[in-house]
Image: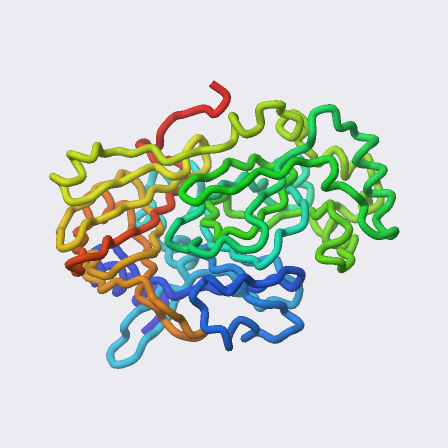
Length: 408
């Protein structure tokens, strides 16, 4: 069966909902925290030289920017039953070919596709201080800017790791010359850039907004990250866990003629956001309940906005109470991942797995088309005692996303 027929078959048999296989991504310069439910013997399934797998990408149409990576690394595959065998087709191809049905004509016309990427990342030690380029600098290397957001699911953070703090921004008063001096020390050991930043204690069941151009060094909580669909980055910290960081990781998304132009590299920093004296007030977020406790008991579920305040993306968590059957309506397409419990979503049996082998197809990830979202998705929690908890990530164009400015 050809690609187009497989996509149509999957779409129609799932009534506009399709099943996705896990998408694992390694990072050669990081250390996996081993809390993503990937079997421990498969953490280095791609080889020690590629690095350990510390990320799982969700509903992704974005290729991972990793040296030596295959062409499909980071891209999500739809799982399609083709007779007695299981076939796979890229979600990206499905949206490229049938975007009007998956996302809606209005979204395809305005945004051209699925422009959001969600992922889990999990590291045993903090990530080096880095930023994701703003539009001006990303466009110069043919990339998109990458604003992002974080939420820390309590279900995945029973163990918080050894450093549950994230450095965000720069201390007020930091100057361009301060940063340039750090960059000039790159080959002299620790360039001391963390002395110019500030660490914040991370709290499960809360989150942060991180605009493009903001320096940050994420800590060791397992993080549900929702971002604009891009893998652009620049690392500004010269030593990490007593190991040198290559200058190439600072300039990998910098035009070659600016690789040693410190003024250009310093200009990639969003100075207004980084020097915000009320950084936490303007970037920290807590869930917004959409139901009162009384409504939750009556309806059998609770849905909360856990990521909001961005025009590029948003996310909810949905909790269905034990033994309840509900119908959930949304006005936009979304990807979803089950992180607790088991039951059914539409025609699909779903469950939060205990352990996943690298090549295994799990039953925890789906993509819901705009058609299915608007018609309503039937969800059943088949447990008599445990909540069914689902994370849902949306791209731009969802009219229900709270219009809340963190600077208001």
